[in-house]
Length: 336
Image (tube, rainbow, N blue to C red; front, side, top):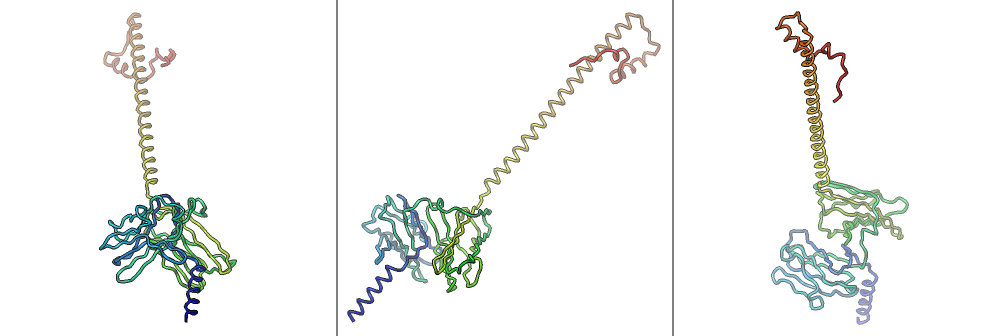
């Protein structure tokens, strides 16, 4: 029996060493970093614990109870704290101060809930550059807030696909959205805090994720990854942007402002033209009167007699303003 127990222990350790760790989120190591853990269900959280997961054991970092409060273990005292536990009991985000290379590894956010039992989210911390810099996008999708958006990828046809994963990539972290095993027709329940819809069935030729009622926080890079049992893999990346409407409003204000300025400019030019036209007309009338007075003086000097009566002469004088006067028609026009 001793040999059997020893053999089982060796087998257990071998499986732990060889089994690939599965994680929900990858976070970039920074001096001040946050490990997000938000429980989206309405179940009652009775207790939660943060653990650092090693190859063979789990090291307790901090423990939180809604009744008894927070306890941080000695190696992490003054280095970590809960970000929003006092304001939002379902937000167990853990923040690090002065993180170093020793903090690289896997972390578990382990919750005890009532009445559904335990819930766990695994986070991997890696020393890496900006995640978005290493992932060029193939397409760009833009949407307004509140829309239901579907992102689609076509499966490769050159080799059979075994597993499909969807990820959201941001500069500081990568979140797993869905994971589908086609051979088993089973999908992994993601710990992503947003509600994501997807499909997982044998024989499908394309895969999709549906993001309902998108918000500005949904903007980022989305990657679908395909893997075969033989090791082949392929990825497709698209950038998704949720527009907040500010650019459209700015453009509308710009167009409206430009239209108003144009109308003001046209009105100003029209006013200047009308004023100039009236001034020129007044000047011409003044010249007409001046020439008419001169002609009248000449007629008086030459003892010119008009055979028409006095009342008729006043009518003809008024008509001379609008009709070319005979004596004025032979003179050159004065330039103004």
